[in-house]
Image (tube, rainbow, N blue to C red; front, side, top):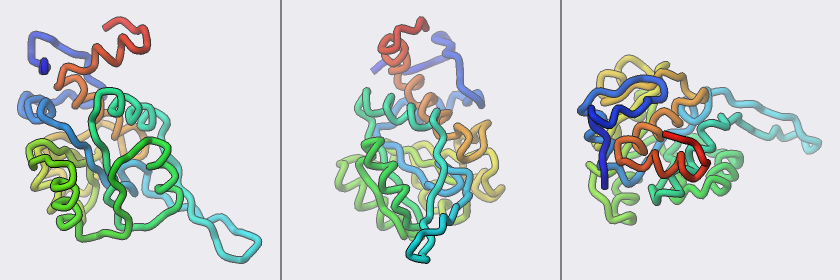
Length: 197
């Protein structure tokens, strides 16, 4: 696997990562993330139904969504670990071929251990994107710990990489591109869409 370095000089999406983040990203085979405040902007919409029971829905960023297609193309596994339960997240995960979906989990370490065992991967091989205090324990274990720009300051101190974008505004895509470029996979993605590097 060819990894990015100072001589390859890739064009970074958003925040320019330091060399430590690039080296960590080059080892990633699994990308996990929180949903609310990371994949979304944290807003939850309750839509009235005829039954009287409101339906919960969320908004997702299309740039982030295309990024999942890129990950699937190069064989990087993905997963969501979130404290809330939502049918919208379930549908999104299925659409984006997300392998691991755990909802209603605020204690994320047992879930992480289960995922790593299932995927037969070690901690240096997974990245995590978070935004709040409940993400801190898993961020501390991640080979590449990432947070969105509007994350809590306490978790920013743990991160190896802080995105330029806020949650729900393309932050996930920034991390995806960091990983793909660090691993040397970005040129393959560009070729797939007939775009020069």
